[in-house]
Length: 210
Ligand code: AMP
Image 1 (cartoon, helix red, strand yellow):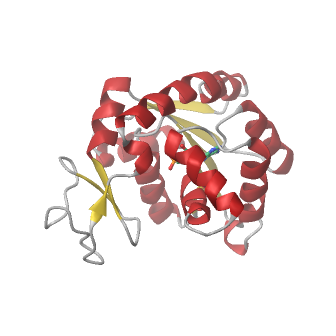
Image 2 (tube, rainbow, N blue to C red):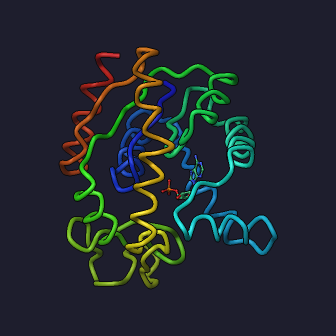
């Protein structure tokens, strides 16, 4: 199964991707995670990517597409994959269609207010990247990762100004993909306002109909 998860930051793409990945035994590929790995290095490209991400802007299409294509060539994608955060522009969608077919696109539907609430409360582990939420998914000990015991931090791009910019960028650059994939008969809307379990149940139901 080759799946795309579409939706603004904070819609729960990463969480849903992890559920589907476990259930179906296919890898979840997050371009945001791949860029966070790049940004942690000490290179010119890393500095460029870091600045773009901190503002909440998009990394240029040529860099993003090259990185994704390289990732798809790894040996674990034979039975399929889940794309979390890619494509984010029409050019990326076209580039993807040139290298592989897609079975379905789950469009996670959620209001801007809910996104802002979720992102502002999101915390990640500074070492292993595990994701928590101060209200919905708190760690056992406040501010500390359950897995590695290190400090939880707010992602730079989860700060209010970057959140506003990411939502604006989503509306301008990524939302057109909803019609793009709907016209191709691949899009299924999923209400992403519920708990992770509720959203996963709706996604499973949607996938049965594909
Ligand atoms: P995410 O974790 O998916 O919210 O991604 C974090 C950041 O990585 C985004 O705000 C962008 O700066 C960058 N990024 C991730 N995926 C893409 C993509 N497909 N195209 C361009 N930039 C991306």
